[in-house]
Length: 250
Length: 197
Image: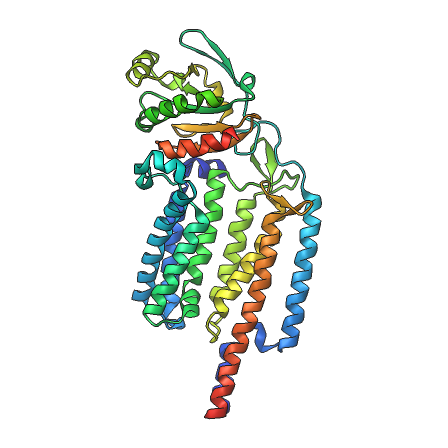
């Protein structure tokens, strides 16, 4: 079954899984968006602008980091090649555009993120499955019976662990009633996803070590977790303070 | 007023802050952060070698092979250690393979003096051998074109799509795998420079 899946979605066809995840994520987000005070039309708009900026920003960021190479073949700036792409740059560009667009439409930034949370969760599931198809982000060798054969060894199916963890987080947040405090829904998703990455990174084979053997990805996840808790607490207290003010003035 | 409060409580029933005050939450955050830090420390002991012999994947030793050109020249990958190598698996009937050949040839000429070599591995077992020479002549290819008549290299590199390109650094480790094509000059340039480091 795994072999058939990997044959069907062998690179570069594994990108199809991400396209399907984007579509499904948007469908799910649409169903709950009005709970967060965001209309379906606006959600579609912001997703369109976000995705467009993600693609353009990812390429531009890559170009800026490899100016010398592009100066010799400038037409490659517009070449259709997913390998000429910088993921952090793409995410930063999409984030900035979402923020600016939301502010121009006078919509609360946190509410937009809350509305997009199911979309993010499905993207993470799609990412895990696309890694499985491409046989990347693979795990350490293991003797566990659920290990999968990959790259000369029976390995932890870390791509499936990721997809499973993201599915559980999606289910958890989907069936819980939305919290009235804007941002809490998204922050809980961020905290749970980061926590799952901190745990699952232990089983991944390709990692970068820093500070005498610590895995860089885990240290980064721990720091995001710390920031996530601080921001969550600020959000909870900020809303509480507003409620108190209303009570005092009302 | 009390009815509204009850409704609000119902609405946020499942969230933990309704059951916890700020102090309790901060204790929970601290415990999670301590557990996370401990897990990171424990994970350092779980760092057994990820590379288990040669495999056609980034970070692994490139699977070795010996192939011949149509003229009978023999090339063994392991003998090229110390040079950056691009193993490009292709066929004459594959349009993206053909589309990327001019860029590969150009980069080969630009970087060969710095210790870069291209091994163009033709999937001869699934190609027409009579088409190979006209193909290489029409594109003025000067890098070695090796004939994979028995599919040994395709099997060792687990080739599923054409073209498939493997950038191998001077230590014989695969630094990048690009499945599909055509590769642009810039993509080739950035990956070759990485392999030459």
